[in-house]
Image (cartoon, rainbow, N blue to C red; front, side):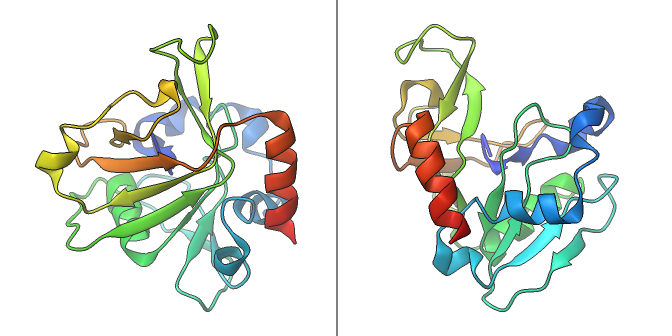
Length: 196
């Protein structure tokens, strides 16, 4: 999330009031389809699919019940790009606490998939001159030693693994590991594989 989170996902607390109307009108079926593109089949096949709350302190709405302990969410409804993610229970709680304005208490390692990638500011311009860089499909890991993570690369625009934190006042770093570079052909095959 930047992950979600993604993660990502994760500018929710500060961006709820700024969301474009075009992203607010997705049907539940479209949200489920978006969410299920985020991870490998062994995760998505029996994952719970949630929708974001209508306010930072609200409840996540169940779009599809699951049985395997994983939860997938569509991209943030007000974000500029559709960036869905799939989260294990630790990473999901981290995301929920962060969006809800609570201080996360991460006590173990948590994992998230974002097969659709994530857009970051293109700081390095090593991968082109556009203002944004599309990080390819990646895995995110939360709960690692924070002092060690502070020594790692914080720039996602060079295509290498990097560390990030949620937008706003959040400082808990997580590791982002790109699986491969992004391009349109890979995007089509990734989305197709996720839907099978």
